[in-house]
Length: 297
Image 1 (tube, rainbow, N blue to C red):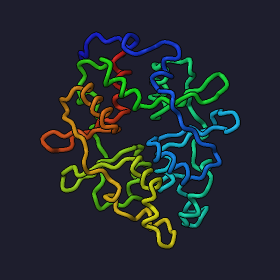
Image 2 (image 1 turned 90 degrees about the vertical axis):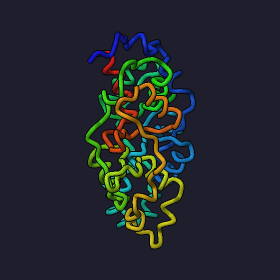
Image 3 (image 1 turned 90 degrees about the horizontal axis):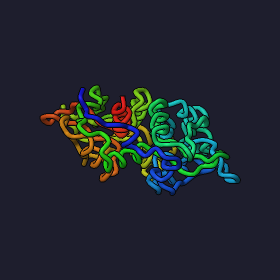
């Protein structure tokens, strides 16, 4: 496939400390003692999909919490056992457990003196959507995410000549509107996806993401469903109650740069691809970040 003479190193900033500038200076961290509901509210209020967990005394990185950790907690993952077994299905009791019960302890990080190429490589190799940036003492200085890189792609001519069909995922896992939230979270965990399109009678009617599940908990939507406090009251709700129906779509012949611009401007993590009104694939932030790796090969 002829994608033109694009040199990765000349297209992406590779200087020391450049990674901090791209990621931005604002970073919100949480202590491991914060409750699960407290962390979910913090993530929702700030609009973040991941938060580094640090020692409040020295700011050193101790773990990370992501929207997918909340998905695993809300069904389908190992941490769901915290609700089901540890609290015998009592959701209100479980969400007041420490976030240390569901966070990731083994965190991949990148040095503040590193470069974007190193960060992208680590993200692709580990299948993660963001990496904390630390100094020589292990203190958190920032976090760089797929969204930061997509924003860069939308501004810098990195993927010239590449089209959506070059990188889109064609085997898309979908669910129906009558699926429950537990069906959704189980599908996300089993398939390893952070977003799932919703199809009815062959037509795309919406999309639901790990962030939507996070908001369901963080903005208090779950409490509107609780009567006895049992987890079933929260998870047996139809997925249509948290899905997004007004969605951006693309075409398989769209330029990747245009798709990146749309994602960046609309602050979204994926775009379903429709050809003749039929779902043919999906392009995610992860796909776009992977594309800049492919450019250098």
